[in-house]
Length: 523
Image (cartoon, rainbow, N blue to C red):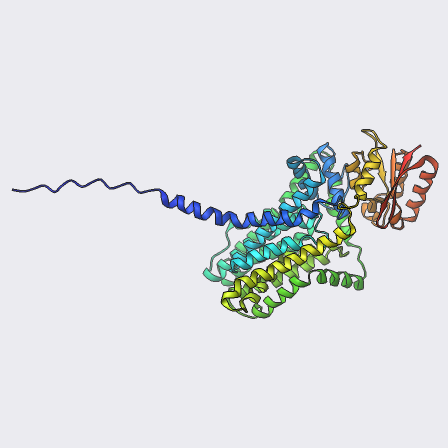
């Protein structure tokens, strides 16, 4: 007699624990690095929230953003010789965080953290170790406090866009060299839009934009994975994508009937500015000063170059890419011709990439058990030195810490003399005074160097006639910085002196480091 086999229990359904476990383990690791950089940026850059002015250019973008929110577009309401990307980002910061200087500095901290994360991506895309990638990002955050980077300058605003584009290009280059893969169109589109957004902030991103495209395409072209016809098509598409954000801004101005102002401020004025040059000796001196400020990163970068620059393999390629990037960044610094300190912030991403690798190499010279502590100690010491170098001189000076901030004091003195709707004229002081005092602007040329100073030729208008018009309308208050009186053109100085004598009286004097700032009220 046959017996039936006992019935088997139904199989248990698969447990969905694996994806959840992967999320639990993967998410903290994926989010840990950007959160680390965000925390480090907010912590180290907290000192940037104290002074009202670090670099006077920032104040111009602040006034542009305020007027834009009121309906007065850049170049039309407030003129400048930079594209509209910076004031557009300031408008975004005002909308998100409120109209304040703190909102602008927070924007800077977020951009610095984003750049550090993108720099981490560059190192990892090139096959570099994770520890060196984290070190590169932290070094960038620390040294962004130097060279005028405590202010939210244009070099900080476009840095995350450029560095992210370099990461995309380097990842494509590695795929082409290791697996013979052709560059992907989606990578080209992302890179082109990133560089295009950076170009809308400042055209000096062009050399690094060319480097990003070269990384994306040249290795594949060399390996035969990219046909020449497709390379040319990608080059044309990339050029169009890089110009797209600027073209959209231009279209918006065209529809408003203000395209001439857009063309002048975005293209013609920067060209006129770049036609001027400082002497070669002075340029060399300023470059040496910047290099000395960045002495530790340069020293660590030198270690990386000595170890890997002439070697094959992923580390050799990564170091050579960093050195090439540093050379291209130098071209972006040289281009404008004036070597202001904040231009040298363009050095920081490639330099910190190399410095992170150099610190990693230095730590590996120790015994294996001491390698990690030695690496952490080296990076921590350099970061602490960078932060102290930024903080201690300002704390010693005391402005904003134990002494009143003269810029804010001038803003309060002006605000006490005006009522809503009154226009003032800041002859040769920080343009952020208009913002702090809540005053109206009497001219679209609110940056003193463009109207009364040595860069008046850049504006391409009769600046003496414009100044005469402003003074004839008798603004409620005129602000004069006697410590910087020598920066005013003689013709402008004569007109301002005559106007003060004829119709103004001294209302307040605020002590500045270089001399008194005078607030004159209309009689």
